[in-house]
Length: 80
Image 1: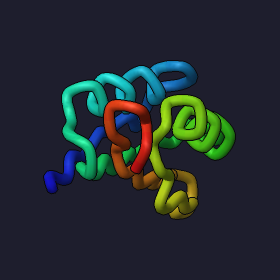
Image 2: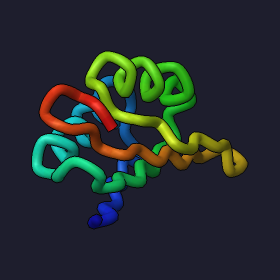
Image 3: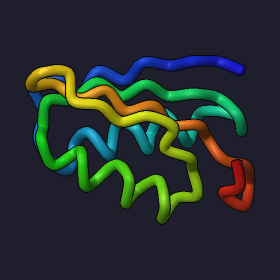
Image 4: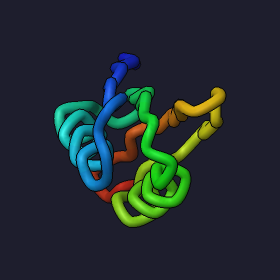
């Protein structure tokens, strides 16, 4: 298992989701992606993207103006 950090600080929708999607496409099932973002819409966008793409959102927290989202990459069918 590999953990990758995607820094999307300073970007706005839809850029954080594009960056995490690109990282997920290069990852293996079970890898973890930690997304750093300060776009408040990530609280809505990241859970929706994980659900649609078949990945598991294992943590999403507001750290005082910036967000940290932790995604576990699913398998070929999107299963985690």
